[in-house]
Length: 575
Image 1 (cartoon, rainbow, N blue to C red):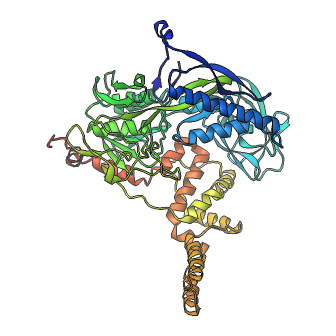
Image 2 (image 1 turned 45 degrees about the vertical axis):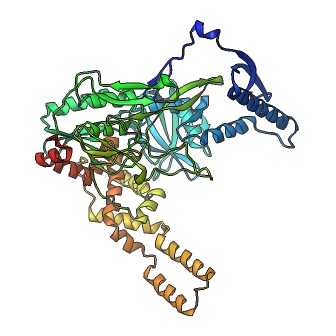
Image 3 (image 1 turned 135 degrees about the horizontal axis):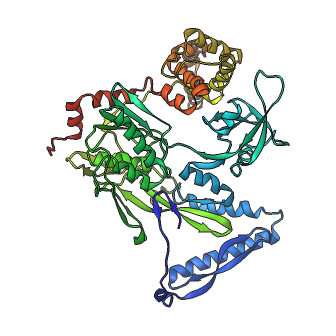
């Protein structure tokens, strides 16, 4: 009984229906990759549409057999068929995917948060694979592996030159099995070997919660796995025992997951029997109404939900339902806009199809899907639905909300663009490498809430960057260069304009020292997060990242001002 992204079902064909189905012999693309032979199966042929399907599958089958027999070079059957399948699915939507057997473990990890291994992120760089982020309390961290360790051997096999996917496959395995990992550590002359025991790894959906702003509870929810609702509930109950008077639920960068978990999380804050969403699909069996089924934890505590452009799917169900029910103030920037529901179907040879089966509608009746994949431009591209084509809906207290473009916050905060230099310092591992060196030189640092990067430490980072001959793309210089080429092409480039270009180029001269000072605050913040993470892992990263969080500060201000909170949600009920 497959169950994923909130939809579970079992297809049953009654005996009385079987006699009404005419079966015919048709070929389909189930490929035996060894021989190139495609096996036939039975399929229905009761109308012209089914005939067209059978005819085209037959054509595809015959075409591939002829290519396999007569094409001048050997065809990689698995890749050829996979490319064909992926090209077909790409014409539908980004969420309908073919998942071969070798990728199923990663897929199930995204829905359960669970696997067996050493408990660490790894990354690929410079044609090698490195430990990038061990999980606190997991085998990698307990054994002593650190971020920046280059993996050179697993057991007795060298892994130099391997891709990260292959290394990951070797690090994973049945729980309670042994392995040895040999690494090269920066600043250490000899190779280091570590004996580890794989264990069942369960990634928390709520990696951090605490009391902020004196009496405001804060819960960071990272994903919607099987345990998400239970973890949020336990965090909420613990915070209530600690005396919170209001709550912030942080859904930023949460890409969603299991639909039922979203319904259960909404249920923590609204009464039993309230409709949270409905789903509607081409197959009417997929039409369903989801209501809260349990007694809530708290229906009165003031609530704020933080969202951004990475808030999608189940996260948008929670934010959108709480907005439509006037149960929470939504703060941040417009969410992603995914209003589609997927389920899985089994395929031959242990593969799976993740397929979009329905659209979902939140309590006001609106669909928040931002892109209509069924209506493409002539070139195959798609675009977001413009605001001018969206429709108005009303919340429980009569506030106007709109469909067709994600969840628009009740209180929109300005998004500050980071400097180009910050992106390249991150991309080229300067933060990571400096934090590796810093951790090697400092056994401990203060607790995350007390840590502060000193001016001397920032100067040390500047010296580190300059010692590496850091180069980065400066957009203004690139755009000016492009403009010069356009001016030449269009005949505007003469002696006068050349002097003007030269003067402007002098003003835009690449100055690393200046940029490191201009963007001091954001660079110091990103560097601090990377350093704190070395000592306090995922929790430390979150604590450091919310120290100067403008969205969180705005949430605290609104939750601390009852009249403002009531005004935003129209709690007086005036329409």
